[in-house]
Image (cartoon, rainbow, N blue to C red; front, side):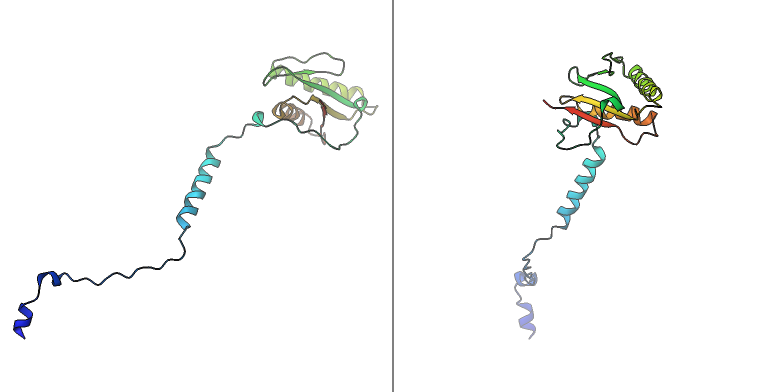
Length: 161
């Protein structure tokens, strides 16, 4: 029996059991989902929202009938890439400087609504060309909304091309 132990081949000493082959019919996609959500969160956090780069104002199919006679009307016409020309109902233009423009808009709407306190002017209408960017209309709405908190809404009319 001692003879048998001494004749062991050195290659047999490093004998290992064969590994079982895993039979995975399905792939684990958990790491891929984790990376997808991390990328999504990264792009949301790093992106900036710029309302001036939003698309064109869509054409309205239906809407309320608001009379311009009963409204303080501001006309918005395109004047280049991101610039607009604002004018009053009588055709006079507002200043091209945005800060001065904001104060002129507030003065104009205040005078229109006060002048017609006994009459029926109680609305503000923005009448824009179809080429005007949404960001410009939003900027003017914000000026009006910040100055006149008691107004329920401003109406937007878009000139069809």
